[in-house]
Image (cartoon, helix red, strand yellow):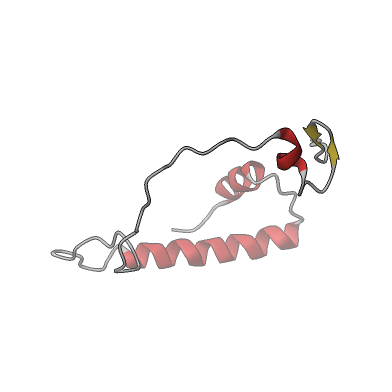
Length: 95
């Protein structure tokens, strides 16, 4: 499948990307290669192959949750890079 202009427009809009014509051409070619590769994988016969659910054969060793005394405000702020007690100070988020 070839990635067309409309698909590239949708992807770049969702990713908030502004692409110049040269970038559009390059990315369109790369996306087309990726989609072709995935389509090639669909040709592989996977009949009888068990799904892979983890890359490790190890089993998680989970511990029981044990309630503990909560931190005081002073203890919670000890390692804060910036604090204005009793608050953490964080950078503003702007759009």
